[in-house]
Amino acid sequence: MPRRRTSDRDCSRALWLLGLSAPVTADELTAAYRSRISQAHPDRHAGSAERSEAANTLTRALNDARAVVAEWIGSGREWPIAPAHAANGSSRPAPRRRRPPEPATPAPVCRRTGLRAGDLVRVWPYDGDPRTVSGTIVGPSRYSPAWVVLAEGGEVPADRVRLAAFACPVCGICAGPAVEHPVVRPCPDCLVDLRRLERRAGEATRVRSAIEARAQAGMAAADGLGDDRLAERARDRRGWARRLRSAPPDDLHAALLSAFTNAFDRWAA
Ligand SMILES: [Zn+2]
Image (cartoon, rainbow, N blue to C red; front, side, top):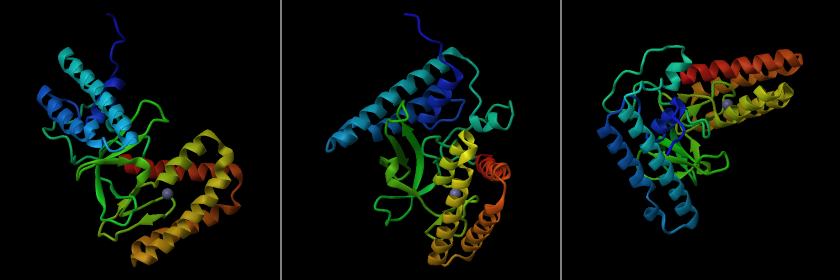
């Protein structure tokens, strides 16, 4: 039966779902699929109808992803360029790696959750030790559940994790535990604000106020952690947001967009 030719995008998405980086051999595909599917197996979530349904969705998505990558291997087509490389305008293929997870180069960012492999998170009720994100799994629509896969095993709904040991370069919000090198990355609220600003310049005033409020919260959080560097960063961001109070609307919109864009470029590079 004729069917739509699998696109580069389909392949990239399938690789991402399976936590793989191109090029991929059939053995690597099998190993990645088994590892992912063992965590998503509906039997593991039989106690909860909601989780069991989500696990079924994951299982279907993983089955589809495996089929796409298997077809790609069989076709001998050029592998799609990973988004991080494409964003740099580079046409070089990704370097071949035997073991794709725990990459030296940053993993792709999940557009839905803003998380990527290697991020530290705390899981609800947010009082335990930080866990490491190994990937995310999202359903086909933006209303379907998103799950965060943990390197330590298991997966949790995305709305039940919070970033840990990080600071936001735009708004200065931060979270503990205090570590020597906290991740500097845009926070989830800044991700949302960037999308709003891109759609509507009129959001700039509200976004500026929200950034100032987050900077204030960041200062309090940093003081609570006793981390002077985080406190300094948050104070700097609050000062920046305050200076923009009197900026004309167009300048404000441009300043915010430029701050977000710089932060995202550096983070995704
Ligand atoms: Zn932020």
